[in-house]
Length: 355
Figure 1 (cartoon, rainbow, N blue to C red):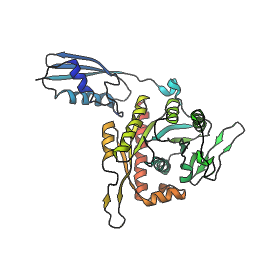
Figure 2 (cartoon, helix red, strand yellow):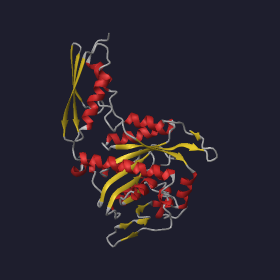
Figure 3 (cartoon, one colour):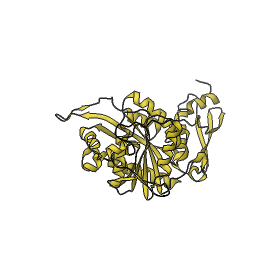
Figure 4 (spheres, rainbow, N blue to C red):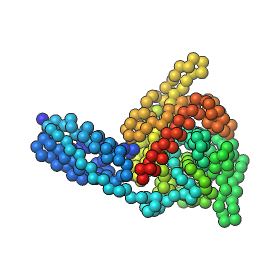
């Protein structure tokens, strides 16, 4: 039988993750007191939230990891609840609303090549299909692709006399992308401060008025652009895009950790290139492995929003300049994206009601 100690209790509590985040309650500093009286344990947590489901989950998960400890007779987890700071209204770290936009959702990935822009384009289209007014901001300054996916590489945004940028509108979606500002083969040769300035212009100088959702297609990684966005924009949440393989998941964890550090809620995981169905016999091939997105979603305590297979028609639609959701709403991939859009809207609205 092990000897009960505060250190042992704390060590076990490190297995309890804060709902929606990859960090545990110990690293978040939520454990305020541990008392041991013989075989009885009292743990006191302090949580800043307006969501009643959060303390319920923390109490349940804490008791679950503590009860099996040898020598423990009873566990009492007491949670003190305080009101969270309103980051959007207080301006903490400079995070503010974008004029004319109700909700801002960031689409992120830890590494390139996982199809994040395809997900961004089709999610924006799917939100539009279910009745929302949507805008799409291509924050990948160095590698913009959304202008191609919306057939807008030869369109140029206009500006008003007060230097407000009028975004391109395609299929009812407002769009701004560096790909619409440069010639086809022209690279964006910009240093860090200029990239930050360009990102801020896309976010603050563009007329995004009348939007229910603004989707931000972030570049891969956790660099200047991501930091500019998370520190200055009041995000409604973030979606992490990954493939099933471990090399992509490692980087996806870094992206989710970045959002955790700045208190941005991760709405869920989208597993792209999940599998391939042979058109000849319908056989499934797990080219990049299987189940990685699901395991990561479970680790973060967030939903797996969808598994999107490798699909030739989806790729061809994007290359033609019309996301598959708009080109063929009844396509199986389109239906997956529409399902994701419904879930994202539900989670964002629930979160808004809780606050």
